Length: 354
Ligand SMILES: [Zn+2]
Image (cartoon, rainbow, N blue to C red):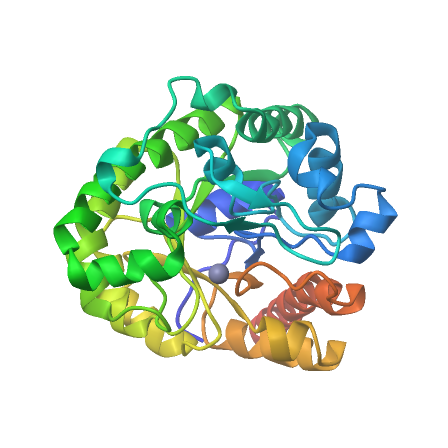
């Protein structure tokens, strides 16, 4: 452990999350959900299944608050899917079922000029649903728990509008057209983001999937670094960038954008990532989904959480949207381990001072 200062008085979850995001002292590491932690088991417990919970505010709210009421996280995040904006743009969406995530099918545009953000985009049903849910969550939990919203970045919107393969081909064949498209699409990121803040969101996740598996670090620098810096300036609340996969090579660029935090994957080493970020951008993550949370035992989850905490991570989360069939006891093991680890740390301090 580094010489981190811990507060001795207990904080409320919302206060803890906001302090951790700002790099200020906290009483214990925060456990948050920048992306979805909805599971089939939670859907059953509160009778709020997918796909309805993506599209009906009351069900969205009920499922989202289980993060706090059933699992013990410090935050609530109701935007489970990554297609709300794309549906509002007119993309065809397959909303799937309880066991699967919604996806965009087909494509909407062939060039930047064909992308239109409707004047009434904030009144489209799949946008309104999110805004109503955030407002209700704020009414129910606003002083107690951090409410996290989510607005997709222009790179991910590009995948949906053009189709992922075509968009990636365009980055090679016609980079200027990609840049023009990002300029159009980023306005939707800003509009939806600000609307969620006005509805009551404390924090926003901004997923923009320039992932290590799909594009090189130079792509992040050349296509996204400036746009992300601009988005940070225009969206007035703490922002968490989410990019899955191996991203250490692009962290030096992310660090300079001004994002409050980066939601990172277990493919990246915690200590090295903290070093790269130099305290300029906080880190949140990086508990493995497919092998640990989904497949392994709760003991393996505990071990991985402890490793992350010992390495100096102050905000813990599943690395990306949680697999829907994740066992409940594995998910609950994250906040339990953080509490246990913090009690042991305090015990060690008391023993030392005696
Ligand atoms: Zn992800």
